[in-house]
Length: 241
Image 1 (tube, rainbow, N blue to C red):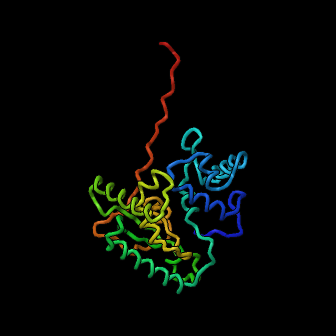
Image 2: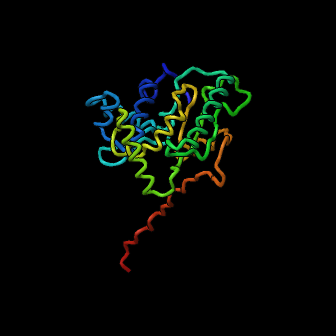
Image 3: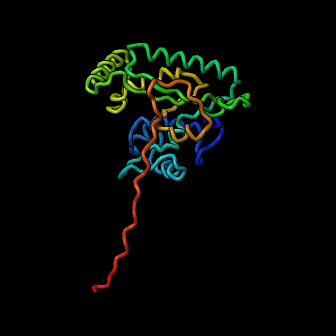
């Protein structure tokens, strides 16, 4: 997805909205204090921003005084504001990306592995000479199948990164250290690559033109379960007879 760097979303600068959602999406849910810490809002401005994002469908209430980023918000948070690229530039960025996938999967320092890579969007359309960006979805899983061992390895890796000066925003950020290190390396600071999580954005990815570039043997696309069917309550008969 591409956003206009000079455009607006729900009345706010598009880049501000994207960057704010990008910092909030790492939390399952968050409060006004967290919003103010990442966006620099205060007081009434925070509430106005929340109302605008809820109306735009980018965030939703997650409890009393708490909100979370929606799937649509996740998509916006991964958007690029870079200028359109040539197909040659996109193809080069894609080759470099696949090389990073290979490195992640074979380097023992990375605790996660990529089991699927799906290209989607304008790069799949050969008639598009200047795609907006290179949209890629990945599915990442732990290399260690044993959950307890995986947790222990993640904690050791988190401590190693802390010793090198890395700062974790909270317990959740630390808990998914294994995932974020892989995701960050795959992105590679590329302004051409727009990278999303396939399990989170699958509904959008599969609805768009797409091509599976890589999948581990036996891999099957994750299909989220349908929402539960809520049957209306039967009418109440007030007659005592």
